[in-house]
Amino acid sequence: MYQTKNDLAESIRANAIVLLNSRLADCVDLQTQTKQAHWNVKGLNFIALHKLFDEINESVEDYVDDIAERVVQLGGVAEGTARVVATRSSMPEYVVDSSGHVDALSSALAVFGKRAREAIGWANEIGDLDTADLFTEVSRGIDKWLWFVEAHLQPTCGPDNPSEGRAASSFVGAGNQSTLAASHAMRSNEPAVCT
Ligand SMILES: [Fe+2]
Image 1: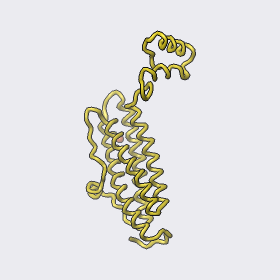
Image 2: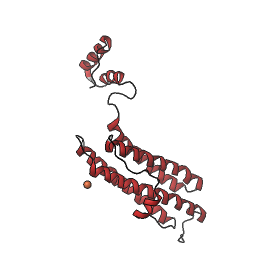
Image 3: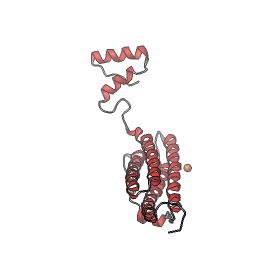
Image 4: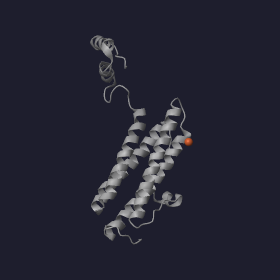
């Protein structure tokens, strides 16, 4: 380790460096997976997903940089080459099946979000609250991107009962006509239209 005037104890810094380099490998792996999705996505939502996946890639690149630079701030060496990442990453391989890139990338974001959240606790245990704060910021960002991607897979009219969701959503901000139509549909057992 490099000498530094940083007042954190050397043992704390050494543990934090190991933790940070582990998550650095995962984060670089995730970044390549977002590009894989960006390049290869197809279908009716192509342009929206192509742009969204690139936006996620840019954010993940920022997380990579923040994690790597914290390693160096603590007196360590950031280990982020492709070969190191390939042997150290705990992320599953990016696999696209019939469910497509939205499902594959949301799974990858969920795994990394879990890893980042675990790292918050470990950094706290180590005694490096700044690293815990860094992982808190990263996990919050990943949760947002997971929402952006996963929403493409979720029902538009409600989380539990789609038919109830359709009726309820017609009442919210839909105006009197929609309200009356939905009310009539509920009374007459006709399927309510999601508006
Ligand atoms: Fe591109």
